[in-house]
Figure (cartoon, rainbow, N blue to C red):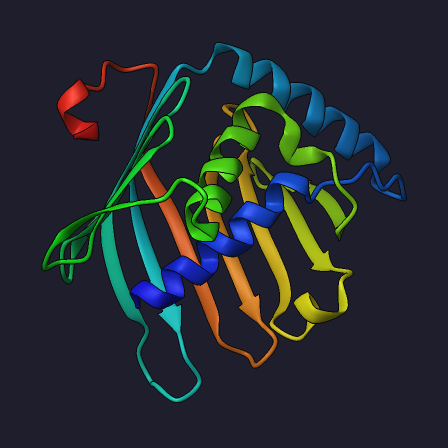
Length: 208
């Protein structure tokens, strides 16, 4: 499960360069979303959110489920804190990175691919760099109070691993509420974010 999470973090990192301005039939929705997204992020100083991660595998009847809390505070503090079924956390404080795998706490290099990818994804959602690449084709839709963004990889090697990535953003707050990664083999990873708190005070101890 942890290896799968790290794989997702690698994919998320590539998303810092994902959204090219691929104008098509949904251009008006795309422009509307990007404008509102950037405006919302100017006001955002911190995020605290529960998450539920479900891994659907074709060889298993039931998904593997893990839960925890995600923390982020500008400019460069973040923590992915898995609490069930086993403790695991991943903390970034500037260029310092710490991982706890359930047994021991270990400091990692900030140049570690998974570390840099995850950090870049989060920063990308804050500063707008998330929307500046053409590595994926992006389709924008709006329905049911959400913006839906579907990303389809263009790069050959990525296509071998990922069919598409589905992102759902709340239409009002522009918060990411669900991420679904569909693998080429048919397995799926779905991460849902709930009880989201923005601009609340997050104690420094969370990131230690």
